[in-house]
Length: 52
Image 1 (cartoon, rainbow, N blue to C red):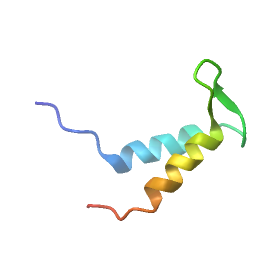
Image 2: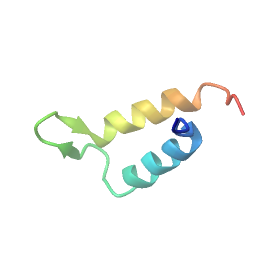
Image 3: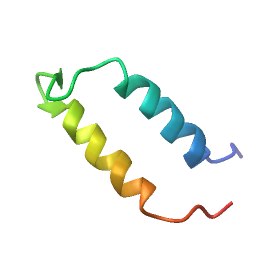
Image 4: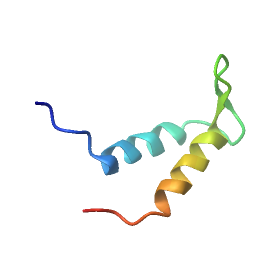
């Protein structure tokens, strides 16, 4: 059985991806996902203590 992805690794990749966009940029036209959406998610995740 495959190991579950590590949340810290996933967050780090998402932060790196986000850093390539300007605030307010639309990342995906079809879904309407914006750089600000990613900021919101990252902020939410940062508010919770790690289970490490």
